[in-house]
Length: 106
Image (tube, rainbow, N blue to C red; front, side, top):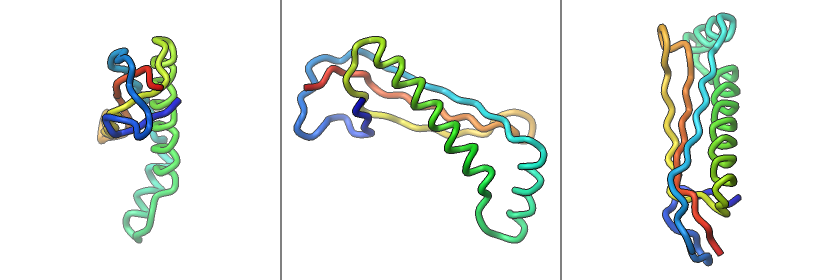
């Protein structure tokens, strides 16, 4: 399935708009990842543990959105918006939400 943050697809015509589709994923970070990320924040550098969690949450959210678009007969999703939030006590959980418009494109 074609997925784009733009509202149109170069070289393709949108034949039908099928509605808004969404996907969400919430993942918790465990205490060891939090501990090592805290150390990394003190000494500088990137937190590989959080980067992996973020990538997994994004993959799950996009997969859910694509499944919903497929169920309504879409061939593409346009105008995709991606949001990231930390939620829970002390921001202990990571939420990724995506939304876009399912379309039939030729």
